[in-house]
Every structure is written in structure tokens, then in C-alpha cells.
Length: 497
Ligand code: AHR
Image (cartoon, rainbow, N blue to C red; front, side, top):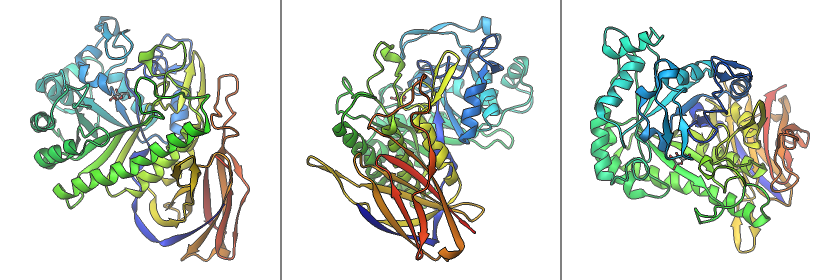
């Protein structure tokens, strides 16, 4: 297949917000416990109880923001259970996820320490479903108040004299479901009330985030924007990619066929329609585009790995997940006017994780590598890339063969990322570089490809799917030429010679 495109190198379309490369870590399965927190006494190398290998890997992909403690867990979480001497912290059952004992050893101080080690911004999700206004208000005071106050004193007594900086605060999670089964009218009023007490102390300015819709619940978006839009900085959207239409049998993470490959990518592409339609509603109530849309849960959701706790949501991650990540990033870039943050669910050992751990072992998933290859787009200027996407058909279903995105970084280099969705064929791409004297530029690339639809990494073979230098690219006659392998994500860098 041969595809043509035009890259308008002089047509900037605004910044690609680095926060769309954000992550989400919940008290769920082995994400926080084992995946991130092992405790100070663990034989696994750690700093203040946090795994060194995981921190190092996440720093490499320049994780910009981390959402915590949930998820559904957020609306059952009472933050005061997670402060003070660890041995005195309440033990409880994580009723939502797997019915296991939560010892609260990872709490506010540990989360803020994690963000410090990662060099990322914290995004804390407060409890509306089962928490009080006072509880939320006091959490913000505990975190950020500088001066004489009961919560600032409690924080100091627990070893943290200076206030932390907290930029992002979520007022509830999925309040249409696990966060209280509310109607949008009711939530909108609660949001207005709770957010009043999410105060800005000193020069700490909190970005207030309202709970937005699930998938295509346009009614929720309409009501919450209408009734509470002026009280928020952003509103969320959750959309997961399930290969099947059934929550009882979502489809397998590995061992699937070409049809499941095609369907999964097709369902991922729905993100574009969802963002477009939710943005149109937001435009009615916020024509200036002040309020951001935060896709703070996205990714694949499969049947759990055989033999694992169904409440732990542990799944493998293959080259198909890499394509899902690339497609979502390309969509988020395109919608940079509204989409200011996105958080993959979830960082380690849960759903579309970028890292899997087993005891002291750690592997990087194909999704991790896409985050690494796309980090060049963080805070870069989006460029207009018009491409013939081609057609990839399977049975009676059709999706684009190739999707792409391009940006210019602060040094003036241009990066183009291209996803070849086809499981069976290469794609020859020729991109006209309008506005660029190609003879004075050079190209290099990196690619991640699979040799079968479910190619993945294991603890025995951690580098089955790993990025490789990409040779099949050139600059000739003012055009960029690239031959993309089947099932691949490729990032090309154009730099002056
Ligand atoms: O990410 C797993 C769960 O999915 C989250 O806890 C919840 O918000 C969503 O339904």
C-alpha cells in the first residue's frame, strides 16, 4: 500500500500538553502495593519504600503527572487512615478490588514522596461518594496550608513541616457509578458545594476537576457543564477499549486472532468521536475553551490472566496495546484545544500497564515503549499533517491503515509518529514537507513492531517487543519516504544537517 501526505511544517496548531502522557495508579491489585510500594524493609532495592527500578523506568518516559488514589477506590478512601506511624494505621478490606487487606502503608506522605522521586505533578482524587465536605477540605489544608492551622500542625507532627504543592484535585470519581450512583443534576450540585472548600492556600493554585461522563453519556456532560461548568477548570472522560461488547467476557490479552486485533483498534478509534462530541457540548457552555477535557482513564481492559485474582485486573500487554496507545495519542494531539491531560489506566500491573513486576523482576511492556517514543511530542507545537489514511479491511469491517501525528520541539526538530494498523502488510508513506528545504535536513527513526498480533514481553523474554533503529526512511525530492512494517509504531525525527 502506498500513501501520500502533506506536512505543513509552518502551520502550528497549538501546544501538545505534556500532561496527556500522564498516568493513573490506584490501590488496586498489585499496582501500588508490590508494583510501586514495597516498604523500607524490602529486599527489593527501594528509596523510602518505593521501588528504585520502577521509578527509574518512569523517569525515563518523563511521566508528567500521576493520578491517585483511584478510581473507584477514591470514593471509599479516607485520607486520615493513611497518615501517622504505619503500625498504627487502620487496616481495612479493599471491598472494591479483590477483597484484600489494605494496611494504608501507602498514604499521602508516601504518594507525595513518589511524585518527588518521579519529578512529576500530583493529581489527587478526592472522595465525594462516601466522604464529607470537611474531610475533603481538610485534606487540601493538610497538603497545602502554610501557617498556623490544625491540619498544618498535624502534617508537621507527621514529619512534613513545609506544605506540598498540589496542582490537580479531582472532586469525585465516576460518581455516575462506583462513586455514588448519582444523577448528573445531583452530582453537579454536590460538585459546586465540595469544590467551594477545595481552597487555594498561599500561592498554591489548585486546578479543580469535575467528574465527567462515562463513554458516550452526553446527557451527563450537558447537565454538569450547564450547572457547574463555571466552577471547574477541567472535566473528565473515561473510555476503555474492550475487544468484545461484553463485560463478562471482554476478550483475551494474548492468544487472540486477527479479527480481535482489528476490532480492538476499531474500538480505540472511537475515542475521536467521543472527544469530538463531548467537546461540542463543552463549546456550548464554554465557547472560549477555558475548561479542559481530561481523559483520566483510558486503555485496554481484557479478561484477567488465568489464575489471578479477578479483582486485580492483571493482564498481559502486546503489540496490539502499543497500537492502542499510539492511536490514542494521535487522537489526543488532534484535540489539543480541549484535551489538556490524559492518564493511562494503570501504571504498573493493572490493565494497560506500562510496567509489569514479579517479585524483584520488572519488565517494560510494548505500551511503555510507545510512551518513550512519543515523549518527544510533550509540550511541542502540533503541526498539520494531512494524510491519506488508506483502508484496512477485515471481513465487512474497515478502519484506516495508517494514522499519524507531527510536532515541532523547542529546538526546531520535527517529529512524526506513524501507526501502521495492518496486521499483514507494510505501508509505503511519502510525505510532502511543505515549508521546509528538505535538502538541508536529515531523517532518522525508531520503530516498534510485532511479528504476530499478540507479540509481547515476558519475564523470561523481556525484549521480544522492543524499539529498533528504523532504516527504511529517507528524504528525497522534498519528500519524506518511509516503509512502515506491519503492526508497528514508528517515530521519525527530522533535524537540520
Ligand atoms: O481502572 C479501573 C477502574 O475503572 C477504576 O477504578 C474506575 O474509575 C473505572 O471504572
